Image (cartoon, rainbow, N blue to C red; front, top):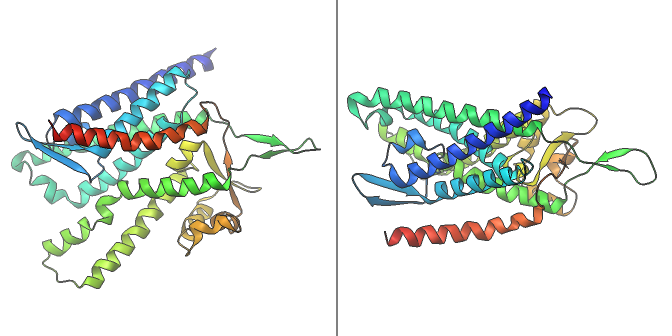
Length: 327
């Protein structure tokens, strides 16, 4: 009875937090001018912004708005499925966690730039920024942890025996994981990839640099972005945001997944042509580390229906673009 009560309480708590974050995000994007959006919004996808002037500068980031639309949709699916459909809501919380980690690093790194916005009030502003990112980050971490606790591993009975084996994720879905994770990695790490830290340091210390430095920085930024992305999620959750979307998880054959194995899996991803290795011999980062990606029990809607997310994504971009041009 106590366990059932705790589960109901957790489901309601997750619903309230997800709905609150979505609504605060919409409010920040549509009604709050920069830089105050940093206090209310938990997502800062740093490109594809449209700017308009109304009692200050109001920047609407289309990707942020799309994120909040999908998070709200995931929350509604979670509620109306009686807390069984968790794909979009787990994806949303995982993105918030990484976004808060990166924003914390950005505040520390660019603290002089941030403090110049408000002069004497800068320290108070930064204090509230830290409070905001920790609240959003911790709440998202707790909610994602509770959602993961409800998931179980899918097992199939081996034909002709009483033995049960893990249900491995099809290679076609694995390739979709790669594409989705690549897209999310780019939009979340864009401030690092586009060279903002590099150009900030060169201007601050009046450094002269060659084109080769820019190329080297770009390659290093891509490596660090992908490395941190996979290490953070697979070491803590044994899954990436794309795997949350397909209800999949990483496992090691005949033992538990370790930090060393996760690091090795991540480094192998940088081997040339590794993303296409599934075409002829299975994924190298699985084969060379004796790991596999397995299915969780499907508790929500069919995965095929999620293909509707892709055209919806582009339709929302088009709608917001046209809407904002005529406002």
